[in-house]
Image (cartoon, rainbow, N blue to C red; front, side):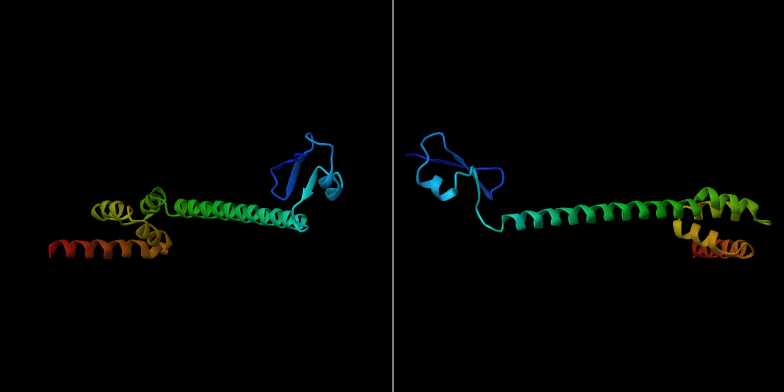
Length: 142
């Protein structure tokens, strides 16, 4: 009698091809079952794989949610310190000399300068711009 064994998609199961023979010795051993677990723990291993897969999916979803939240926070921060907002606040300041005005426009290309300008109290913004302008002018004269 000749028996053929093939592996199923699940390595824990063995598929027998019983078409070439009348049964015999192996049928007595396996109780005429088509699929035999290779190990008695295969059910536990499958559950463990599923739980691990679920944990990985959950972790990936958490990472994606955190990434979206971070991107939204960055967008809010960029909007808060946008050049257009800085220019609007600059236009509302009283007593801004034209040379300081155009210096401020160049200064607003720096994100840190924009954040500082917007974060300052209104009465300190012009003084800060004047100090930056004077420091820049002194550095250029050296």
